Image 1: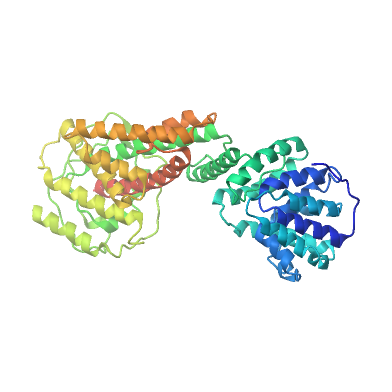
Image 2 (image 1 turned 90 degrees about the horizontal axis):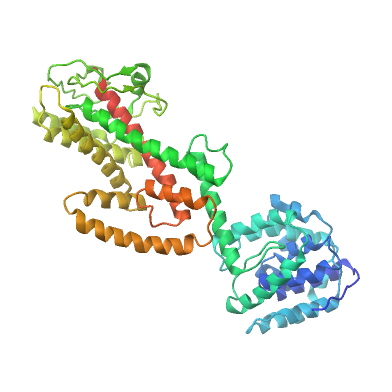
Amino acid sequence: MELNAGTAGTGSLKTASERDEVAALESLQFTDEIRRLMSAPATDNASSFTALLELPAPQAVQLIHSPDSAKLIAAPPPAPNVDDFKGSFNFPFNSGLIERATRFSLFAGDGNINDNNKSNSPEPTSYNSSANLQKPVKSEPTETESYQPLVSDPTVENRSTKRKDREKVKGSTKKSKTGAKDSSDDAQKLPYVHVRARRGQATDSHSLAERARREKINARMKLLQELVPGCSKISGTALVLDEIINHVQSLQRQVEFLSMRLAAVNPRIDFNLDSVFTAESGSLMDSNFSGMVMPMMLPEVQLNGNRQQYPQQLHFDAFQQPVWGTEEVCNNYITPENSLLSYDSSGNSASLHSNQLKMEL
Amino acid sequence: MNPSSLKSRFTTRFLRALTKINAHKPISSSSPGPGEIFQRYRRIKVAADKSMAYSVRSRRTWSRATLWRLRTRSPRSRLATHARRSWVKTRSTRAASHGKEKKEDGGTVEAEELRELVPGGEAMDLCNLLDETAHYIKCLTTQLDILDRQECTSREL
């Protein structure tokens, strides 16, 4: 497509051209080509232009159809990632570009777009100042966050990240050229893919999907990093995964260890739910268990019917434990919580336990 | 204390299981030999895992896998493990095809380890695997907390 290096026109006509072009291009596939067209005369404005092109199609159409752009201007306040759009919005106006844009719509059954364009081209002249342009563009980030025609979530997330990345990725229009060619094929297969690719990135559907997948994985890794203590400092996927693996292994081993302990400790226990829930782990922290030798006690169990009291009244039956040989010190995995927890629904289960124990005797 | 939280669900189940275990075992007055203790340990561990998996039901893959594992432990081992292995193989190949096409460097080696650790993780793509791992870690910490407290209270003299 040849490029008509147009001279800069008035602001109103600029916005008109943009609106038209946005309306004409219902999918990303043409933004690259337009970008290429526009970038030659005004490379510094390319970022803002693409920002405008990011307006979702219905919104763009709405902009065209509704001469009162006040609606959109009063729209949600500008999103934080507006920094991208700080540049000047001086698009070189070229009426020829409008026609070219309309010609770009290769959609099979989308003659409507062309009709809309042509019929509405006189309307956008009501947009007067570039300020109007700025606000719709600013509100666009928030709009795009919520706008989701047939796009899955990852692609919506992608947009915000792509916008940030666009600041970094500038130039290299060659990639966008090749991307545009691929995407034009995709357009005919999937007319509803409303995904915005980064500038200079391939718009191949495969790479897009893969990027979405990567974003998902990165988000989940962040969550895991918060879960696993000491992982937030580590950077790099492999090391973080190593930490996670170690943590899971240690947790599993601790479960085995504790269950071994339980097996050794309690032949007969009065399971007082309150005692389980209240903070008793302090004793474990203080004492140093070497060998886990417990004094032998007579096998008597005193059932405490009063669930409200603390287990000081309970006599635990414990057998002499064999010396395990390993020094077991309770380490940091015990998290003592010193808050009283009242277990409301324990009524049934606790009485059940006491009944069972009574049956044993 | 939320009566329907994971913690409370697990606790009730686990305590019930513990009482059952204690009821079944004849209490020997002399010190139980290591074999006995080992048996008890196995039972308690199984009870802990089972009650945790039951608290989560089938909402999570790992809980389903754990329950499956526990159900088909030794008695009907051969048939069950064979069936399971073939199922896992088909699913893992499917997961591998769309999950690991482009080898993410550093992601696959650790991912394999993680798959082995997390029950039921063999046939999952990395994305779901990380999800499951997060939930699994959360449940393991809950389990540890309750086990620890139970052990503390039972050690009290």
